[in-house]
Structure formats: C-alpha cells, structure tokens
Image 1: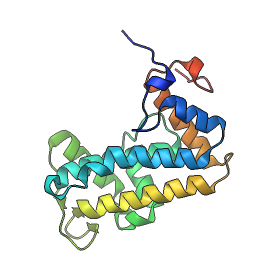
Image 2: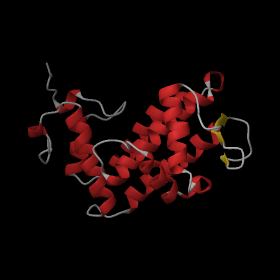
Image 3: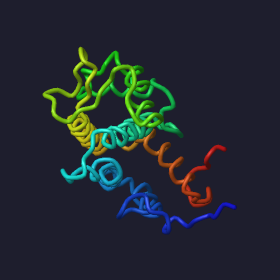
Image 4: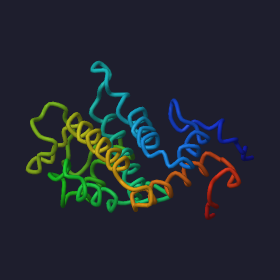
Length: 200
C-alpha cells in the first residue's frame, strides 16, 4: 500500500519541505534553492564525517560514491543515480578537483564504488587511506578519503554558486528542476501537487 503525502509533510532537508521548494520555484528564488541543495548534500553526505573520532575511510568513500552519483544526477537531470561507471567518468571529466581520476572513472566505479557497496572492500588492488598527500595516487591505486570528501564539498559549493549565478531559464536550472520532480514524486507527493506531470 502506498501513502500519498502532502507537500508540507515531506522534508527534503532539515529546514526545507516539498512545499517550501515549490514556493521557492514559483518565486524563481535561485538563492534559496541553491542554499537548500547545499544543505541537503551537506547533511546527507558530508556532515556525518565532521567528527574525527568516528571517521573511517570505507564509510567515507561509501557516502562519497553516493554523493558523486547524486550530484551527477542533479547535473544531468536524471531520474536515477548513475548505474554504471559512466556517471563517475562524466563527473571526473567535468570537475577539475578530480582531474587526477580522469581516465579512471570506470575502474573507480568497479573497484571502489561497487567494491565498497557490494563487497565491503575495494577490489583490483585499489586502496582507501586517510593520510596521503594527494587525492589519488595512480601508481599505487590509492584514494585518500579525506581529500576526496573535501574535493566533493568544494565541487558542491561551486555547483551551488553556479546555480546562483545562472539565469533561471538556463540548462543547469532546467536539469535541477527535472531531478527535483523525480525526488518529489519518489516521496509520494501526488502529481497534482507538482508543477508538471511526472512520467511513469
């Protein structure tokens, strides 16, 4: 049985509901939407690792992989997060903070993302550390989880800054709004509460 929920009853972040997002959208309030996007990602993927005593590289990379897939889905307007190495390749190719991982997207997906998510360990000789001097050591296939998350946070800031600076009618806003329609529909907010119909 599925329960439909009213927009004011569905939280998208700690301070924003679907109803709030819709009000921001109607007002074309780019600042509030960009701040909400930053808050949502910060709360879900970055804040859990602010405490030094509870950090673990594998948990950090599991969250980091989810964040890469979700950020890329916001960037492309996709209904689902990346289901293959393509999302990682596109993200690493597009975001300068991850330039050291260009050409390694599919292998990263296979040996880090899928390894951590499905096996509870990396595969193919890839390793996760938190004490190296670089984000990715290609020679030894070592990812520094702390540097990776820091680069993700910087990428998130840049994405939100781009939203604030871009015209409402731009492609970056069109894709964000597509992704938000899928998010709201996934929260079982009925289509009549959304601005446009959601394809089945």
